[in-house]
Length: 215
Figure 1 (cartoon, rainbow, N blue to C red):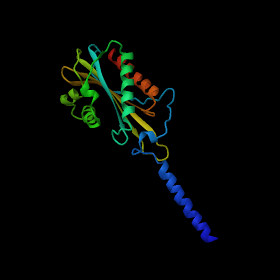
Figure 2: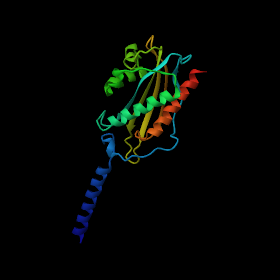
Figure 3: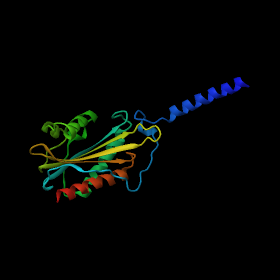
Figure 4: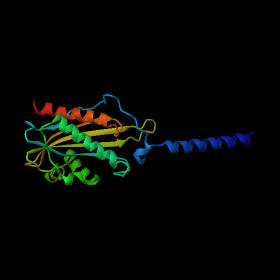
């Protein structure tokens, strides 16, 4: 009887261990293997302050590209359709909030890969803010200012309740001096595949930009 119970206990431990491994969903898990969870009707935005605002107005504002960086298997094929679709959603929201904005076509920005985007963006947000890095994220149009939007998404390593974290950065660059004029960053928790929620939080940031620049 003792041998039977011992064998049963071993089998139970093995099965639990296997189940734990099969249900572990972390940053190495392909996005299609993670169950889709629709976000709340009004995603909660955490926004403490506008980091930089040297804007006097939004005259001459243009827009060329947004970039959605998803930290799962780096920039793998599994997330490429999500990333490209969300970038189009962001572009449509920009047109909606700023109907007269100049839309600048840029093959350079459209074809930019993960590392090409991450390095200049990180420098502009946190380090030296080199004009050469501003040039890498912009495409000259008729105007003297350009809006750029970045969304960074990652999967938390919380084993009890893993969740999606998103950080939105809204930039406005001076295209004559290639300097940063405006930066606002805010966070929200949501599955990156929920396009309705994404458009709502982008709408929040764009309308805040309109309000701040008009004061």
